[in-house]
Length: 185
Length: 289
Image 1: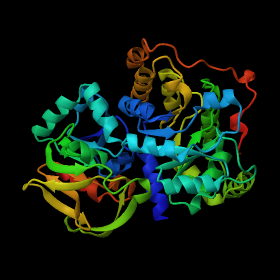
Image 2 (image 1 turned 180 degrees about the horizontal axis):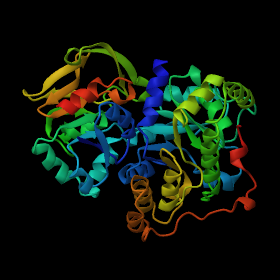
Image 3 (image 1 turned 180 degrees about the vertical axis):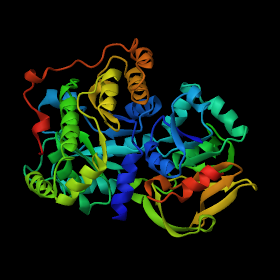
Image 4 (image 1 turned 135 degrees about the vertical axis):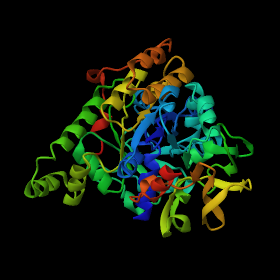
């Protein structure tokens, strides 16, 4: 299985060791041609404005949206979750596909970033130290969206069909539970 | 420990991106629109600091605040080396990252800021492995080459990036006794040297800075192992800042693809005017070792 890492900006290389341990082949995706060769895609943490701009500029937005609509599994991490959201800060999202509304930088600037212990029953994780970095907040979502974990009352790990989103950063944690779940999705 | 993880993790999010110096909210918006992953708010770009030759200090907090209000991407700002009070002010202001920078006039000739006492993350410049590890040991969450800021001359950034890479390569052959000896020479704990050897890289993100003036410069630094690029004077001292900014961002994405780099490099207008090293009165890179 070839798992694409959207390689336009951000922490995509941080997923490689996790994917190797899961026995799948990582593939950096920087254009539509590379996108057509992968079986699923991780949209990494980074700056969502930068990734959105170059998805469009390099002609990848349309092809990626079509792959999403055709059922390719995609995991959005933090900025990636923002790209997958149908609504961002009250406006249509740049990529979309997941019926959620998010607010960018909702918890404040970097000084407010922190690690929070969350329970993820789906993955048998208790008090998992989730790392939130200038994280988005999921404000609302469609009926078909499953919530797998919350921090206080905010959903932080959600799934809609074969799309999943985490507003925190499992790639910065040594464990592979989230990656294993994603490659089985 | 948790704070360190959150701050080092934040620096990971800048990777494969470009951080641009800006002096006004208008420039910050141009940088954001061009695809910068963060901006550095300062009153004068390094080329002007160099030309003016005056004491250079932390920028006016009102000016930094105006830039924070203008853009949604992270905002960094600079403090003088060792000036922990400027750092306290920037932390209270809420900037996302503090650059303890040799581009400003040093405030303390023997001590850097004890960055482990802060909640806000710091980036520091380094010319070699010793400087990089000392800054990490003081709590820096990110390292950049010093290069020679405000010159538009890439030679010093190349020298610093190559020095760090070669010194890390040389760690491979060392036994425990030699590691202890080297740690003593570098004035850092041996655990930090051992960790660097085992990782085969610095334990924090390492960007290129100081002299990047063209897309080719940015691609060169990526090819030499930089995690990303700072552009100081290179954007807003060029003839067409929006185009140059976007071209440098694209060059960082596609640095392995020379054919794309042709298109990226075309018709950008003139780059900033460069200064030869031998013509410099002040070598900023020699500050804060």
